[in-house]
Image (cartoon, rainbow, N blue to C red; front, side):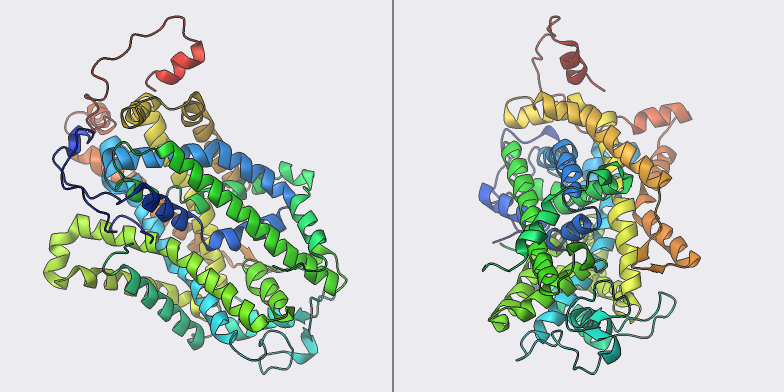
Length: 568
């Protein structure tokens, strides 16, 4: 049983406990029925299609094992501390991201709203991947897998190869042609929409129907391949020169934030239903380790398949080249078609992709539904009458916004959205989230929150990461991503200028709420500009009762300890 996000139906204990924060005293907020339920929900949200699709692709394009080094570094120095921070904020405040950030720092209350916006924008094109998986699933029930040969109506016979063409640039594999000409019906560029691919639109519609049916009431709850060794060695053997490539570190940070759900608001939402003294340290380690191991395991499996294809066609591993999601939707279907019992393994593989995607999609959609219900519930229900209709409206809007992705030029739209939302916007939003909580609200206040919930202060490592490593690392990565900005591209296709401008607008759709929220807060405050700013950065979260008998400062305490235990 898995719960997606804020409007899930955890079990209420029926009373406010003594551990409940002063702000929420008397509030009968529901809680998870058990600790395992929260862990399953957060692991289900974190482990998704990105582990199977994005992580192996980034490894492939970043020199194999060279990507694992910055990835694990970012998990250790940013992923674990920031997930702990989000769990602490949600569990202590018992609020969703919008109201939690409004209490922590009214000036940057827009950060909470920005997390909601980026979650919804992300789910509009993330669901397209589920539509692709459904399309492949339906086609995998045939006696012969349609991507296994060149004898189909969509194949360009003179340009089709039954395997991977390697250096023969004029050839395409049969699985690549299925992806390009049958699934996508790909045009020559983003400026040639080509009309809808109706079969794919039907799959997208079905995926949204599945999502709606799962959330409208609230979610309650191999054999050895020849050549696999070469593929795995490519995966685990670093190309050390890639470690000096800024883009590799940027992609590693984005992958960590994407896979752990950092800055999407869902982790804060789910943690808000925890009991006040829940062990967040244990939960953070379980979620982080499970997520990372799943990514690495997916990489081993995918690169085993790549190694098998290189062995079969007598080509180097780095010549089994595909672009974007093709590493999963081209390479793996090709492998499945050559396996004994493919009639069983192919459907199971795409069912697995669907199950992975559903968990993550539940959280992204539900956090949007809950925000609308909490913020505008009375007004909205005057027109919609029932809460189920609100979820239906959100799903319909998501479907409509996803239509450009299932046009015949949709793959270019998808790649543009993925580049601008999953990398640029997310890193920027993560930076503002860290600044809000760790620098303005302060590491000392955050530590006090953890101390009251857990009975002891967070470790020196976490405090050091919150104060220095996380903000400075993300700032360096954000600055580097701007200085070394790489325009979006799909394979050899270069986007026109107008598409790049659209990409920047997409990047700003979520971020713009941060300055707008700050302007709104300063405008509504009283006094001079300086007084208004001072009011706006003062937390409204009541922490007076956190430590009624504070311990005296130990003058012999190390300088670093003094720095980390003081207010920022």
